[in-house]
Length: 349
Image (cartoon, rainbow, N blue to C red):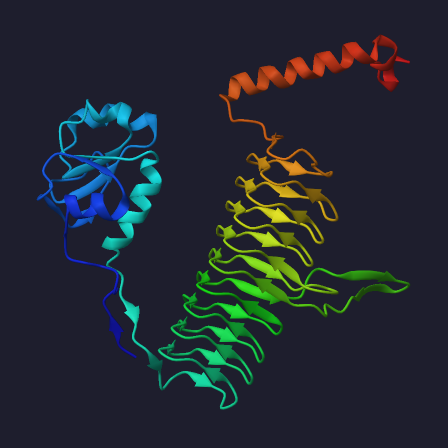
């Protein structure tokens, strides 16, 4: 199967056109053209860059970029063309889509793919080499099924969705419109359901499915388990980073995002617009309100009922000597609280 250039990519753009298209204020030469994006420190005259994090502000005075996307407060100190934005990072994200050079597979079914005759394939669908599409699967218009992907019988893949490579969609999975799934992700594998019997563990059948809403993104090697009874659900615009585990029968509200190595135990209900930082997680069978932020390495063990609250349990890194002193102080404090009669060992009794 051949590939075609990214249809969204254009060779170059005039700054005036970018300002008008994305609702930005231009200060400088509107005829100047940019053809790529780059970091603030490395951008040349043909690239557009941005300043959103204050840590990089010292680089602003030396930048050679064709234009910098930044806030009004930083505009006066910029030596090159400026695109003023209320949220520079968001504006950059939108502009950067115009410069994505990665090709996309052309529509059609590769001879090395296996598509069951009973599958329903929409218009302009691309099925790449090594992909397998099972009986009764429904593939929406413009979807892309990348190399080595497996779409089980009866799966629904919404229009405009993209399985990048080696993605597995198991039985009972339904993906909405424009869902992006990165390599190695598995959606719909059995949840971890086991019951203790007299002679060992017995498997609990996982009889539900997985429903993923429109505009979701699933990171590489992440796993979303099927429901045991009923479905595991991700509402619209949920964003999952790499190596994230979502257990069976979880319900994740719209616009929630989870960074790498987050783990959510089964039957957890998470509200809308929540944020989970790296290596955070939640016990099973709890509920988390809308707008909650869970910081890195924090484990939520009980219901969070206050919308918009922030929770933290991780211990920040510090120099080794300082950490050792802190541990020694904690040990002495614990002994002091117990009292001398509780600190003696057997040899002192």
